[in-house]
Image (cartoon, rainbow, N blue to C red; front, side, top):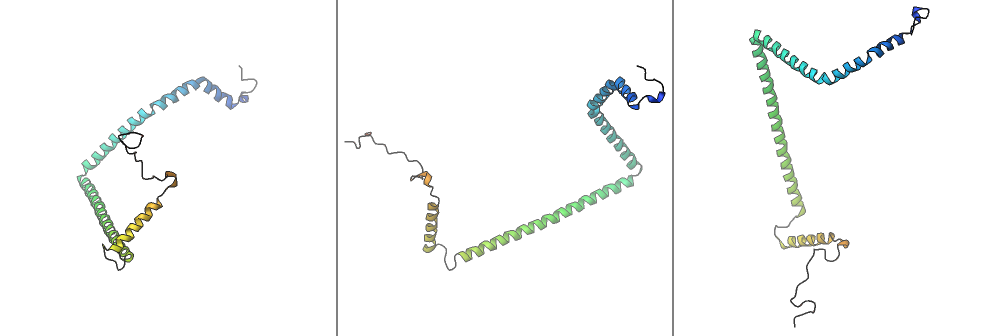
Length: 169
């Protein structure tokens, strides 16, 4: 193929790029696939190298100036102590709120009990009768017509020594 027909500028830019890609394309695809599969290994090596370099820089920095290390450690301890104090304060506040909540529920339950049975003594017969009536009503409220008359469960028939004939005789 002769691209030089008459002028040098008649060659389109697209054709030159395409010929380069066509001649080197499979190599480029191979290199991209290689780096795709090698990237986790490369990333691991890079992070370990970076960590090792940071540790060396840290050691060199604080080895030259031990006062800086002591200042950093004291600041770290002060921040931990502050966080611990805040945690204790929050725990105390939560315990106080819990105690208040318990007292409120006890007060409300006492008020409900006092208002529910005004003038009645504990263990009186009137109180027991009203309780049994309530219990009886709740059992009838649970009646299910689909269960049939014997809704209390299965009872096997009584066995007799004589069989079907009735009594022994």
